[in-house]
Length: 238
Image 1 (tube, rainbow, N blue to C red):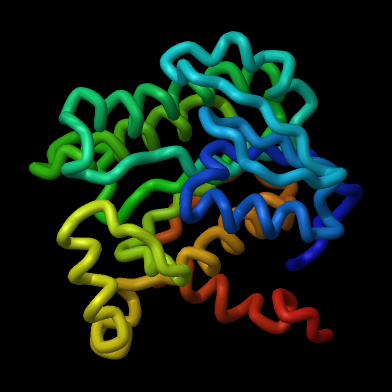
Image 2 (image 1 turned 45 degrees about the vertical axis):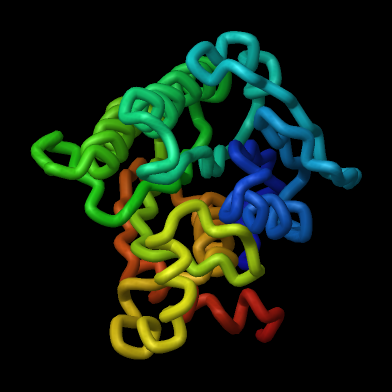
């Protein structure tokens, strides 16, 4: 992983018990560019590490109690989410948009200079005109993050995220995609991304601090380009 310009960073990772968030936590803890990591989630991680501080928080509809934990942070990597079809539409909107916006509100008040790396999704539509609820809600969250006043916001829009490690797939569609992944990857390389590669890119981008204020959107193709271009650095090569 590449090293930031000056000093080690303090990172917050939300959703570290999830697939992408788990890899993000692993990379952050292993990185010499990271001073410490605050993990915020509903479930215990079941691990210990000298860099790690774990904060359990059940009600993401109100993140006011996290104000102290979020103070003095350099960046947040936000991976909290759910799958379409696994919850009701109301729950999908709450988890996808409302929770993100509420967390960002408290982080912005506690650490106004923090960067924000957000796990969005392919087809996210900030205009709200998409027929897909997931796309509208992710777009709503993106729009709010860009307007929140953070100096740097990075919006990641992956297509199919390959789990890498075997797991119980949440829906039939995901079981099917995992089964055909080897062929799908060859035919449509820009429609897939490995979970570990995605997580690495989300962490790396907030560590490579830039002086200018910016909001960047990374589509699946862009994420793959980041991973490929930084592969020597990631593998420890000169």
